[in-house]
Length: 239
Image (cartoon, rainbow, N blue to C red; front, side, top):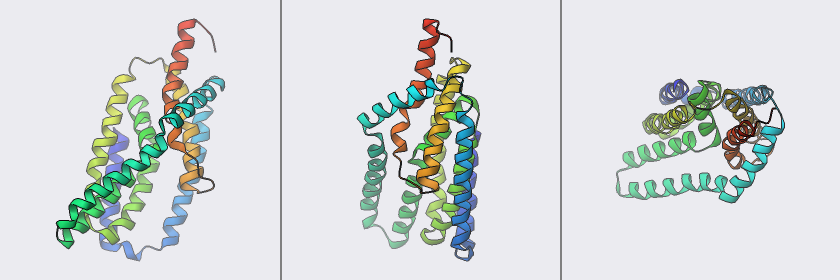
């Protein structure tokens, strides 16, 4: 859960900076730093993919996972979840004072940005299963930068968005740690390789903004990678 704690700290630090000095930080600085994080995420994704013992396993997992993800419309559900929560909470705030509305809007907007997305899920799973918090460390820096921008305009409510991040990502990490304890190390290796491909997609689509990729639909591939390795081991197939 170390990655989630780093993420929470980054949101608090970025939020405080935004409250007191956000307007003084040039936009070009934030944009260039995000691009740098995009390049690092891309390189890290490639590195993780090269850990695979057989490239056919992550390939098969991605094919099956993408079919399942598109069938379940995961990308749409992730986007719709954020939209529904924002509408409901903002509707509740209409009868409140202006300060309360501003607080709620800042809290909701930041919480949705920090919680809804493949990087939060993938990073939390990696952190829980193997203790690898690199993905969440990158996300932490990005969230910290976003907190600066949001807090400077939406106020202190942004800082409280760290609480749902703690519960959401921490919960995923704890579940992943418990459920992944009995997995063969090779299953974790292949799941990590698939995660690397997803990270590459996130870098290209969300951080570098080169091409829009429906990365949310790739998430089931993490499960299929484990299932494929377990099946091959049960059949006595060497790879």
